[in-house]
Image (cartoon, rainbow, N blue to C red):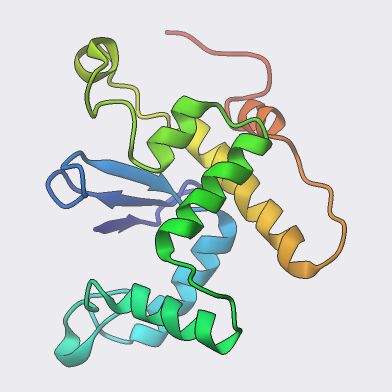
Length: 172
């Protein structure tokens, strides 16, 4: 995995072959996630890893699941897994009008994977703005959920329009 934190559009990039479905995957980082990454990098010191394990290697692939298990036990949440969080994100994005193809790309389930010749062969667009709008929407919704107070946030369409330059496009 690589972090691109330059500019206004930070991105996590998972190289071809490292993602579960063997497709390169680009994940825009919301401001909330970028803040968490900055904190993790500061805590990791001189390590080459954002979340280092023992002897300056990466954390174990099971580390996140173990942390989830400890947290759910501590707060008596029941049998919740990482995939349940993915399902929750997908459900909330759907409820907030994020198109299915964008949700699939965020979860790395759609697009170039299989079954769709147009997307798999001819469509090289990365959907970065669409994914960023959806993930920023989710981050804002999550902030509202965790604050316990009623919060108004911009819709997916408003966020996407802002990222793409409102209602105008530039060609050429």
